Image 1 (cartoon, rainbow, N blue to C red):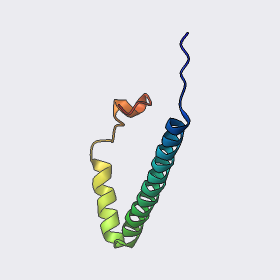
Image 2 (spheres, one colour):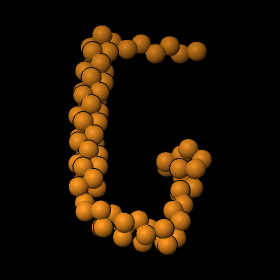
Image 3 (cartoon, rainbow, N blue to C red):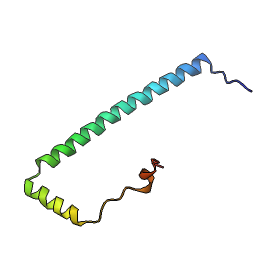
Image 4 (cartoon, one colour):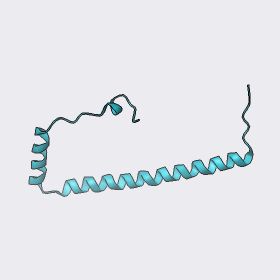
Length: 76
């Protein structure tokens, strides 16, 4: 079997890249959290009548079906 050898420089480059990916994911998580909070806040601040009308409309519409891609755990 052939062994793979990674040079010290390649290993350091890979570690730097992984750190950058990790930082990017952290920033994206913060952004998504802020967006979710804004959406939640905007839903909470809508007038009660508007919320009731939206709920009534939603209950008469077709039921939401989870796409097959999510039912089996795959997002591809």
